[in-house]
Length: 314
Length: 277
Image 1 (spheres, helix red, strand yellow):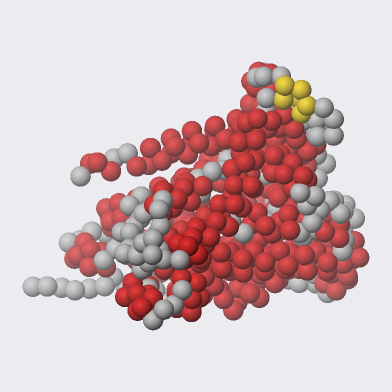
Image 2: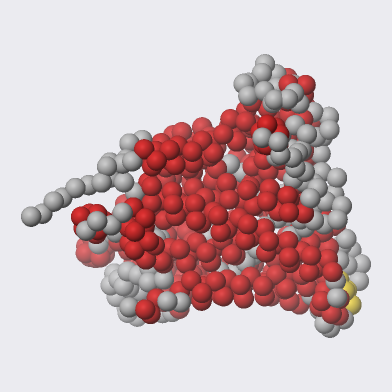
């Protein structure tokens, strides 16, 4: 994470003395103020207010009554909560691990000086990123459809299936994970590739001369030099992946807010939305938000810790 | 004896990358195929893999079922406002953090970086309460204004301003009597305009594709963005299999056209981001 605050603080152009007119001295604050105002009103205040609302029985058009920690007691007794936690982590694992591994491999393949059509490969991999989540969900639902989907037809040709990717628990998790991974693999590939290109080519050449094959080069050079960006992608995909919402919402047409009749793929954010905006229980919904916050912070921190550990082996 | 060889590109490199390109592009092709097929063609086994002649019929139905043209326009208004707004506001703040000296600068910048790690989706309930206090429910500014704050954008622009603009240049302008604003607007901003353009582009694409927040805030069909209109079309899934697909395709076309023209710069921009080295 050495890049976070680099380069070193530059020399200032304004002397910052009191001889300057007041307008000039306030200019820097005016330039950064819009961000802090907007983030304050729409980011920080709502976050703090989530904690506050979670202590109430809060009906948006009726009363709100202070009930202390009752929402959290209720949450910890709610099997729907544990179900949502399980689903969220299952989908996160199924999407993130293949996504980052494939991105690593692709970045390694793209990092050839003599590669032809390099621009085409890079651009085509970014196409999923500019496709919206909603459009992605619609097209993958069709491709994975039980009765008319291309995938099940292909599987049928080799005697498998048909698989119901929407109604079954693991099937729906796989389908959502495929949607997520499809959209983000290319983006992560480009991040990895950028880091790889900063590695001096001579290192690879020297390794090749010393008889290191492709796989050895990948393990000994590629992976270690990518460590900071790998940590970054793991942490960001944790923060994003645990808040997954749109894909599960669009999955089930019969019961969108629960992602199916038995909540087989209802994620935490979807559960939050269902309680808050479907059942109008703002207090309970906010309590789910607090739980999600704790999980995201803890899990992102854990992943950061695990992926940075071992840096001291030098 | 020194032997300098650059390894030849093996066939399986092309096979792997070709497969990745195919998987990346195929769903979009499929979206196009289904949005040109009638329901019978979309339901035949094996599925039809070439476009049919039903595109105009389906597209017309899309525009009749929901106010789709209005939705595209709403998306455009929101995405352009956010793209342009982010490019300007983040350049300005990035300039202050990179090139101006003021009390609390480093602490404030650290704060900006820290806000990137705050998961914001989980506060949608209070966010909605604030929007309704402002009487912004079912309006486009409810989407635009919160989207203007981008910590990532400030971080990114600061990086570019710090590395591309020399302090001597700004010093010289100062000595000539330029105010801080003139230094920014006449000298610094023109020099980092390419980076600001890519930032605005990324903001534009993200805003165009955003779903959860518009889904919470927008109520009436005339205010829908394209993504929410797709969801509304999906509710008519039983009527016509291709309808949601056609809407998805129509909402993706503007992005694809944009991508043809500026895709290279987006790729370069993402690769030139905060993580080089």
